[in-house]
Length: 194
Image 1 (spheres, helix red, strand yellow):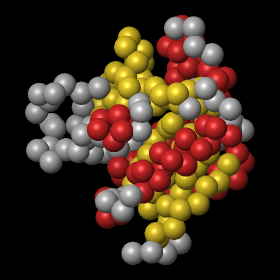
Image 2 (spheres, rainbow, N blue to C red):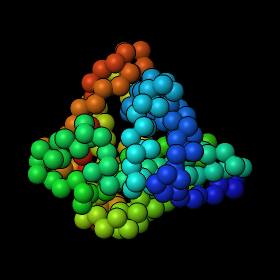
Image 3 (spheres, rainbow, N blue to C red):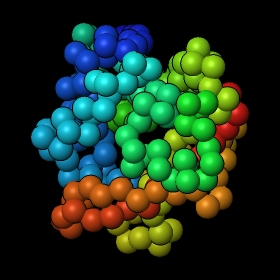
């Protein structure tokens, strides 16, 4: 398996948003997101990326096919719903780099691409002169019966890279969940200094 990784920034990211949407629909259908995504929903969600001059997409390709993608942008370029809890807490979103999704085809996991995605996003945060980086992760109950026995806990990876949950900083997003329809989900912000 000869996987290559490259980055695209700003308007150069637009041609790859369909690949990102495809991977989001595929990967986020599984635990913990259980997202029942559609191309129309993705187009609407990713439209903010087309307007974000600071957008970075990291693309993992195998034989010319995008098999993984990760994003980062200045938080001030994100949607109002994403910015609102941070701005309400007095955080200057212009000095913050937001790490969006990191999605990887299951057949290409275990190759160190997740670590590469984090490192590329940290480098992008430095080029933006961001003081901090953050991401938001869905919160699920530990005893949720839908949790697979082999579910991977990503918290040790996040902590190894210096991220910690920001106490009291959460947001609520609605998305269609498998077998449940549109419901609200809590997401926890995690931060680290750049």
